Image 1 (cartoon, rainbow, N blue to C red):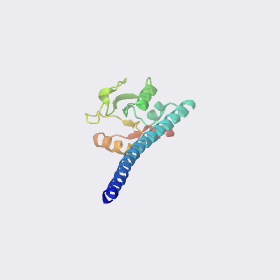
Image 2: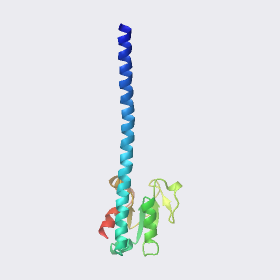
Image 3: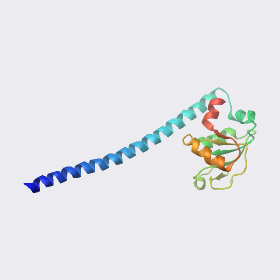
Image 4: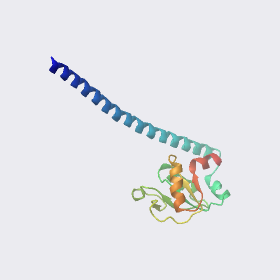
Length: 158
């Protein structure tokens, strides 16, 4: 009888431990999925604002010209970074280089470097990454003495 009770308790403990482990794994996956979803929602909203700016006949080059930012760098060379390069092509604004942690795997119409490399002086850096702006700004401020701007903020100021 004792063996049966001990066996049943061991089985229940195993089930409870397994359920706890599975719950932690699923919870972690859900958190990761939520963060991914939140990031892409924020990206969508920023790009939607960009469409509104374009529909109003405005151009981002005017923001840089008004603020006398003639030579800029772009941090984050994914979708928004590529679109910013395209937006400023043919304007008076020079894009000196892009900055991205995946510099070795990206192709763009501008040179792309990592934060670990030497960064040439520019009038401003535009951060296209919409998450972790404060951390990115802090790292860039250690290497450059110029304004660090959020593309999202620029889109709402134009």
